[in-house]
Length: 134
Image (cartoon, rainbow, N blue to C red; front, side):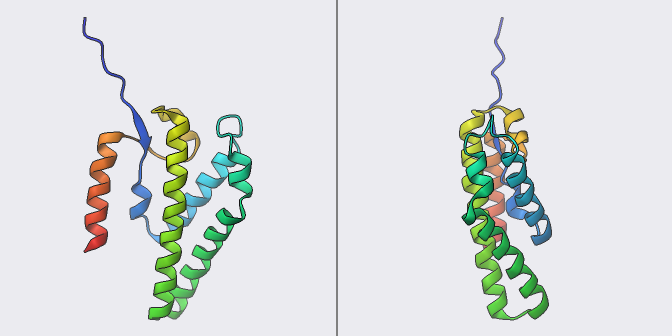
């Protein structure tokens, strides 16, 4: 009898390829879902009420609106920086969720992330990085 190996999941980084409106929605969804589950995510209250978290989200929204209206190089640079800051926050959050989930897809979903096998996520990360570098 061969035992089937249990698949281990992690948070997908597919949000790196989302457009601005969907990225904002995704970030708010993650913030709200984690904030509502303090029994699972011990840092939920701190995460939800974090000034840094709120600042990053607001900065992203303002930079996107400004770039959408002005279409200048300066506005584009500010938007790209705000986007990078938001992705950094989401990446750090995904790492935290992965540390709590310990491969459990249900916990990853509770936080608002898409569970994906670790191997698939690595391959997806390579494709996203290639796409962003061109």
